[in-house]
Length: 409
Ligand code: ATP
Ligand code: MG
Image 1: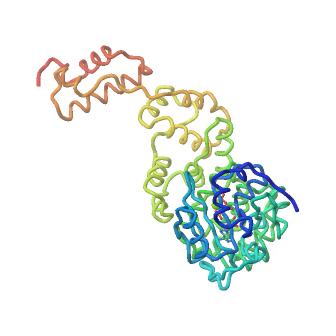
Image 2: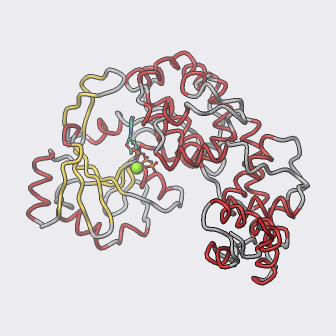
Image 3: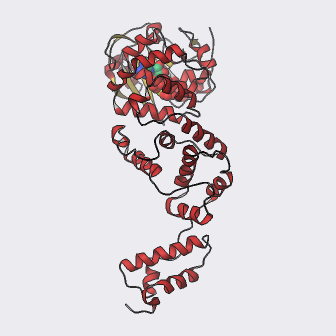
């Protein structure tokens, strides 16, 4: 028996929870992502626990231990324990009775191997006891170590049971894959790609976001293109070359990846308007995508400093950095952007030191003229490299105001 002792096995809250669930008498174990990540030395973001007891029993035990419990997915045997600072999902062991590609009808079981058999990939089918014994029914530990995505059971069958698994394959490949997905498996995904039309836009988006958030999704992207899955879920996608250039630019210029920027790199430079609605993006995500693909601010290699300053002033540092890596992604020149990247990274907003009230005090009538005068002051401010003094700006504004700021209204 292999043992594994991630630091969180000593976590007091988790220990209390396991005790409340009946450990060590009841064979309660950690399952899924946290075990896989522990094996790979990665920290765990959230914890899933499996138990051979049915949900009613789980609820009764947690209530007796005064742990808040929410029946979040009771139909499939999941309840959530609300712990200090974190939620933990507890799922009763299950086997599938019937599947239709979208939903499964499950029956509870006490057999850990049956539960593992319904999980998607071997590396996701591991379980870990509270004392660190690792159960690995399908050789998932070695697959995780070498970065090989392998379905538990026959891939085509598993995909027909649940169509989302095609996207999960590419998502886990992006996050954990070190070996290419075999041509045979790519072909199976290709043959079944039309089934993805039954997957809701929300789930597609969720998987796409996780896929694009991986440190380097390019290899997985190539496999996804080879299987023509994008033809179904993102027909706008123009290929992996831009994504590759974007990822390289992120690395070269120390820019943290954002999935929305990566998405924008995969799209044509214009014409993504209906995407937000089709993928059911949140308002914030949609706004970001629109900003990322709008004609302005235009960023190009060798742009004059004053134009860069104007873009920074108007759009802020983060958007300009994103637009810069997108310009790299969409353009031909990969190198040469380093000085600009460091200028942008070091830039901090310097607000215009004069206000509308100052302009009115110069004798400009309240109304549209004030806005126009402020715009001119802004140009002078940007043109000075944000060094002009208040007095200089007031003087410049006065000069250009209608009537020369003589006080005439
Ligand atoms: P992440 O770190 O992204 O949360 P995870 O492995 O925890 O990774 P989840 O989507 O949270 O992934 O699912 C938890 C576990 O449930 C998986 O590890 C897998 O064992 C199982 N699972 C989830 N979705 C499916 C599915 N569609 N088919 C089969 N098993 C699944
Ligand atoms: Mg998870």
